[in-house]
Image 1 (tube, helix red, strand yellow):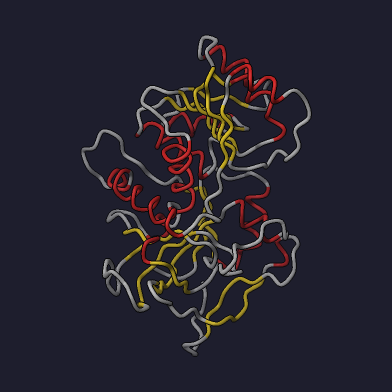
Image 2 (image 1 turned 60 degrees about the vertical axis):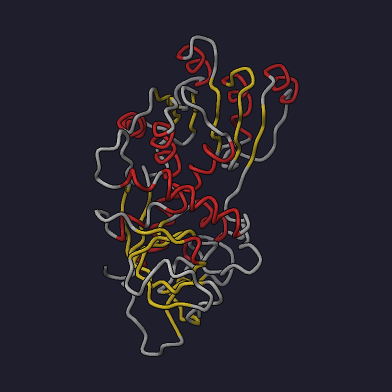
Length: 344
């Protein structure tokens, strides 16, 4: 774990002076953030890995203007300070989780008040760190972008990822029917235990044919696609007439070669795309507010018809951040990879 420095103006953080592999990450000393107008200072207990962290480390995904260059798009911790102009929704010592534009791999982060969420009472801060980025991404894709409706079918690629495991549960919350692809029988079992109606191993033949068979030739209403180029033909083949194909990643390549537009036109398909990190504060605040109202109560142990829970694969100490990056790059994880920064 981090050892807290003596000086109040400095903190420890994971730094990356030049693009490259996991070995480029190192523990350094940087200025401790001071909360600006409308911001809350958080002492971070844990963060979690996201694919964007790997891309940024490689120099392939820059932080948005004004965002911290420190990696880390989510965090959970304790409120330790305030900037001016706050609405007073949080108090010193409150346990919170936060959506970040950067800065999660550090001891402290300053966050706009609107992007904080209370930690559900029965979750630890380590568990809560698995929620913000993955769950808000999945919620955005389903509710804000695709506008999922009751009874619709949703194909979720990378169904055992952090976003995938969240999307399965949220699809059920919205009374939709989640289907998934994944790369191993074990990952498919996890997805099905979370509520996926069916799972398809993308390494085992053409998943689009199996999806059409499962849907009796109709296809799926919505595709949540983090793969991109290498899946385009199978995606179009899987899509129902008037279906929505939501692109939010290009892990399988950016280039498309072939009759995409003609086949999509035949299906009257809609291509939608979205990123979350580069969105405006107003958009993110609306997203967080909607999530708090519609989804967060389902993380509590209640009698609600659908209960939600973050899925955690493994936990690393912050000193082992390079090993954690290698673990994600090897696609070993099912659910989120948590990084412990301080004792809770």
